[in-house]
Image 1 (cartoon, rainbow, N blue to C red):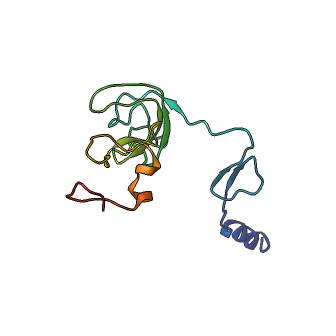
Image 2: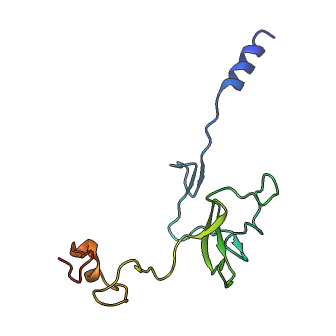
Image 3: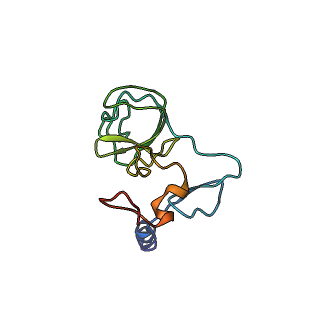
Length: 139
């Protein structure tokens, strides 16, 4: 009995650090997926609007109180002020935020004397280094 108790205390006092590796025996993060020819497939869900968590649920509670940064692939297209379209979305403080769009825009900046957004790096103020504020010239 005297030998069993210290052994049990030692076993239960060891803290376990677990990392999951898929395609690797030496994970470098909590979840490390390595592959030469395959990707990760997110859950495919048909959202109805960008401000409604459903049909996604928190698997721990079974409720629609989704944890921030939950990722899904939306398969549906809706219209209106809460519209969604197919793509990867992240839940963030009550909204599904699309992670990326197929055509990035630069609508905050316009070409001189027009309402056309820049469409090349040559028109980008970050590469040109010049911008006019309150004037028609960029010097």
